[in-house]
Length: 239
Image (tube, rainbow, N blue to C red):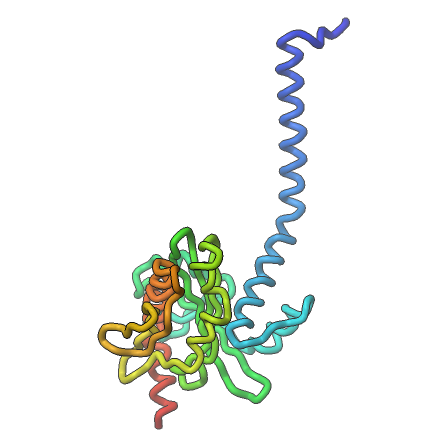
C-alpha cells in the first residue's frame, strides 16, 4: 500500500516518531554524561575549597592537591558536637535556610606545608540576581581569617560580580571573627563607613551595594551557627 506522505496522519506520525527519537537520544546523552558532570562539579568544589587557603592547583592536580591539603573533614551541629554525615556531601544551600539548631555544618581541616592547621567553613547566601557562596578559612586560633573565596551565579559583571576577585576577598585576610567572648562575623560596609556596634569590617563593592550586603548577611547567617564549635578552639589559643 502506497503511503500518502501529504496526509495529516503521516505528518502526525512523522512528528511523533521524530520527537521520540530525538528525546531518546537526548536522554541517553544526559544519562551517559551524568557521572562526568557530577565529577566535574566535585572537582570544581575542591578547587574552590583550596582557593580559600591560597592553593591554586595545576590543571589535572585538583584532586591530588585536595587530598594532600585537606587532612580531615566532618560535620558538627550548632552545639559544636560532631555528628554523622559526609561534609563534602552536605547541601549547604539547603542547610543555610534551616533554623540554626537543625543545621548540619561541614568543617574541613587543612594542613599547610609548615604544619599549620586551618579550619575551612562553607557559606551560602543570596546576591542581587541569584545565589552567592564561598569558603572562609580560619587559622588554628579559630578566629583569624587566613583566606576567603567567594563566587556567584549571575551577579552583574564589573559590579556585584567583583566579589569573586582577589581585590575583594583579600580584604578579609587577617580579620578576626572574635573580638571577645562572642563570634562577630566580619561586616561588609560602604567604603568610608564603619559597622554599627563595632567589629571587623571590609569595604563593599562600589556599585554593588545589594551584593555586598548579601555577602555580609551570608557570613552572619552561616558563621554564627559555628560559634559553639569555634569558641573552645579560640579560647584554648588564648591560654
